[in-house]
Length: 186
Image (tube, rainbow, N blue to C red; front, top):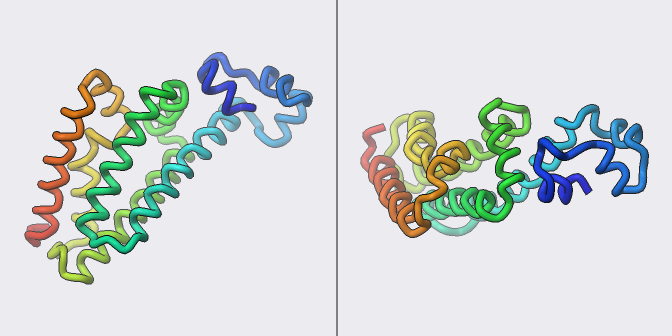
């Protein structure tokens, strides 16, 4: 119910009372599970972020070489973010707010994303595909270089950019990331 309200009304107009009424319960009952409106909205965002993470985990844990995994993971993450902004702007707004304010939901999401990227980097180093000398710097490089395409604030700022141009730019950034990971300069 909360997800539908959020999609339809947005985070500012969503109320615990309306969610409770639609679910056929009292608002006091909803407050037993969610201590505040913000906690309810975080739970909705957490569900969406978990779906994103499951898709990215499928890529990270797949049989492809590490280079392909980095490319697919970044491309998928960027695409899911842009699609959510276009099709579900209220959900995107919640995610953006959580990231900007460093809410616990966003911090957990960043930790899980970092873990996926770390696994791919370690695999690439173990197989010899990546020559990175410093794993932490390599991981930071991936996130720093792809920020414009994967962080919701940057995605919102580039919302008017045509998809084909955004994809071409991301492709160029991914090629540069992979070149650095292969070169051993980090």
